[in-house]
Image (cartoon, rainbow, N blue to C red):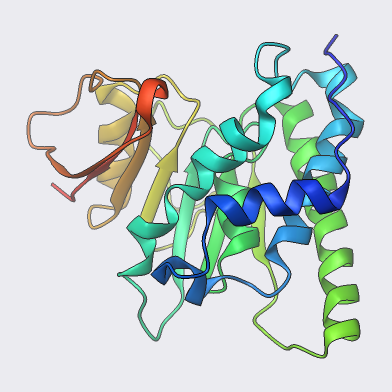
Length: 236
C-alpha cells in the first residue's frame, strides 16, 4: 500500500512550477502551451493512484513539486540548445511515475517519448495519466485556439538489462536516453548503447558517478545541490 499525497490547488502548484522555469530562460521558448496545467493534471492522477501504488514515497510527498517536478524540469536547459527542425526521440528508462520522461514530454513541443517501465501496475498508471493529459490538451487547444504538435508519448513495458531487439516495437533511432530512478550499471548502459549507438544519455544520479563502460565519458554536469546531479554522457 502507498500513502496519500497532499491536495495542491492548481494556482499554487503552477506558480511553483513557473519559479522553476523563469520566463527569461531559453528553455521557455520551447515549452508546450499549457504545459503547467498538464503537469498539474499529472499530479492529480498521481494523487489518485498513489494510495494503492506508492508512486511517491512518504519521505518526499511534502516537497513533490520542488523535488520530483523540479528535478525533471532541470533538464530543460540541457535540451534547449539542441533544438533542430526535426522532432527528436527520447527513451526514458525506468519511468515509474513519469519522472522525468512524461514530464519532459508534456513540457516540450519537439519530443517523441517512449516511457520504458517493467512494472505492469506502473505501466497502467502511466497509460491512465497519458489518457488524462490528452483530454486536457484537447480542452486547452479548444479554449485557447493554439495549435501545436500533440503530446507524443507512449508506454513500453520492457526491461533493458539485456540485448534490445528490433522486433519488439522499439524506435529505430533514438536521440536521447534519460533515467532518474534506475540503478545504473555498465550492462544497462552497454545494452542501450549497442541498440542506439548515437544516443546521448541524461542520467539523474547521486554525487558519485555510477560504473560506466570504459568508453563512456561525461560531456556536461548539472548540479542538483544536495540531491545529486544530472550528467550528460556523450555517445561512445
